[in-house]
Length: 171
Length: 120
Figure 1 (cartoon, each protein chain N blue to C red):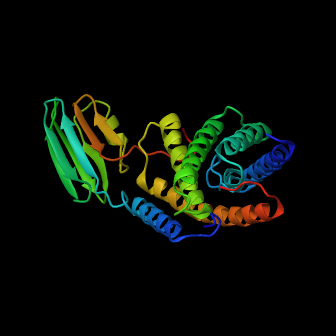
Figure 2: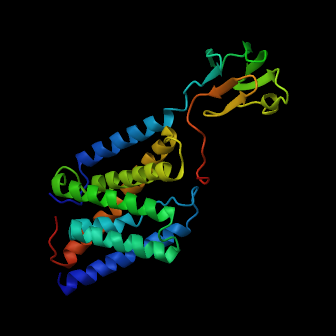
Figure 3: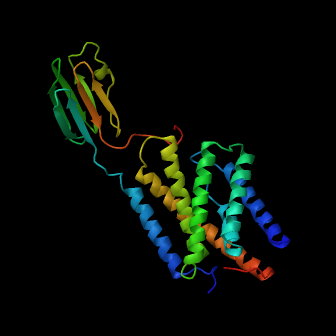
């Protein structure tokens, strides 16, 4: 990994952590639920650099973000860790196999929905003994689609800019 | 083909996810609840929570009266010494139950156990 790539990854990870902490300050109906805007940076990393680099940025985001919020290793951290890594692996798979038909926006939507679904499944498995209520899951799926479209469009614009500025290899 | 331009496949993915989300959102809201009344003698009654009626059922000690009204259930009368079942009052949520232990009668409402977002 040369210095230029490393500095870019550092910037992307820093941006992801900053957005992650900012999001936690926004009012939310549930204390552990976030909108998921910091996923923008993970998406950019995936499309501009690759799956390994995206996993690295996600790891930094989850660990540094939760340390800064003071909830490292709390139930909220477990939800965040499980949801985001499942989503990054899925987005990586989609990026490798399905990106000619799909674009950043579709990958982003599926990632956000999977992130939310895994989080709510982990929440009900770990913290409650009831089964998942359908309407709750439906609400999180719809929220995931909306956030996925938003982060997908933002990420697409930034990836285009990154490609113009540098001659980095793009997927 | 640039990966940053939105495609028709994206549109298909978004629409199908929205349909799945809306389906989940409306499903489960219309589930008709049933009341199960069971006794230690092995008698089991399954009744709809939406049909108002009085049920008289024979237990170990005698006859218990259970009332179903406006989607709620309660013990109206029971031959037990402390009447704890009657003091429990109306129950209406899925997963909720009320029992008269001395008379050996259990009344429960089918459905998911209730939970909120904060209480684990």
